Amino acid sequence: MPRLFVAVDLPADVREDIANICHGIPGVRFVDPAQMHLTLQFLGEVDEACFQECREVLSAVPSGTFTLSLKGVGYFPPRGRPRVLWVGVKECPELVTLNSRVQRALRPLGIRPERRRFSPHITIARLGDRADSSAVGRFIAAHALFETREFEVSQFHLYRSILRPAGAEHICEASYNGKPE
Image 1: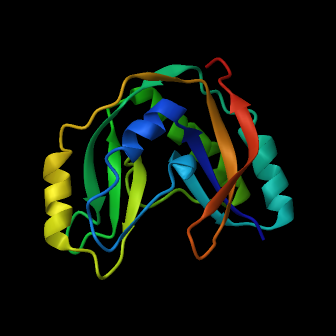
Image 2 (image 1 turned 30 degrees about the vertical axis):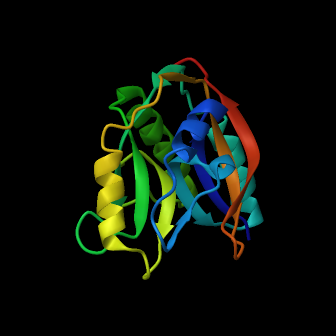
């Protein structure tokens, strides 16, 4: 069964800017820059019929075109031992609207939105139990002012995720151009 998610891609130079800060924490597995994206909704494993329905309903989602920029770094969960490092997204109402529209389109197919409030971010690392917490703190402090240029978002994508020992591989199954709102 396909394991799916809906995401916005990042331009190559923005991924490169992120990759340039991804170092300096022993015991951390940084994400391959080619796999970096902004998840709008994780769908999980779905059967082939649902996969085809997802492809179809997403084609009707209006997204428009908007600008986005990334700002700051942090980790999840917000309390307790960090498990994921992320780069944040500068406030963007159009992105929040797109997320809501994707969720509404998928809900009739039985795909429920996350229970947590949408917190747009780019996952840059997964932290194992051996990650040095003081190095994580130094990383957060050193890159607190990280920021990228603004970039245009005119598409979103349906991805298949294949889990591999070296990390997930993401394959684009469909792309959706920014239909007018």
